[in-house]
Amino acid sequence: MGKTIDYYFSLVSPWTYLGAKRLEEIAAAKGATIRVKPVSLAKIFPQSGGLPLPKRAPQRQAYRLVELERWSKVLGESITIHPAFFPADERLAAYCVIAAGETGGDPLKLAHAILRAVWVEERNIADEETLAAILKETGHDPAAILKAAKEPAKEEAYDRLSQEALEAGVFGSPSYVVEGELFWGQDRLDFLERAL
Image 1 (cartoon, one colour):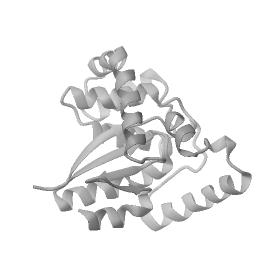
Image 2 (spheres, rainbow, N blue to C red):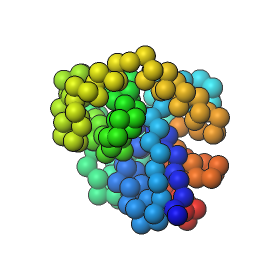
Image 3 (cartoon, one colour):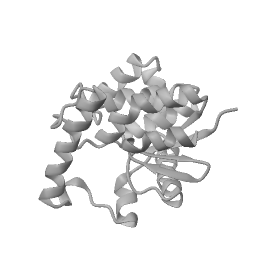
Image 4 (tube, rainbow, N blue to C red):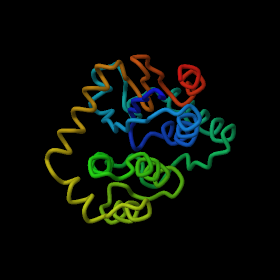
């Protein structure tokens, strides 16, 4: 039986988007199971020494854009460097991903569609109608998932996942944990593959 990957990520992270397809391919090739765990970097950064993008030094912000361009070319993945709806409030989207996982849906497919919506399609994932459309496009029942997403338990689950991530040593997105070993960033997927 294959190993399990605990996949901690933000739904507005361009790096998570850039690594999404490769993560799925690696897991499929190695027979690994992916446990989908959306987290809040707003909760993780203050406890792990990270800074939200607007508070980073100008040099770091500029270099981030250079690296996004480089990686998108290397990977052959389209990306909009300055999407229309970034940053977006990702909470309801994260609650939908959690609800999809709890109701027999496909949280990985949904999460990756949401990431693509931000970084390629320039859609507003904070907008409920947009989320409903993405849910429908990924084979989910929009009304049922959105209803479940608005239950207080989903916010609590999101907070729990964020705390769990901190306890696992996570400090950024995406992070992959296999048998207690942390791999941070889509540029560490080669190491993840070796670990599997």
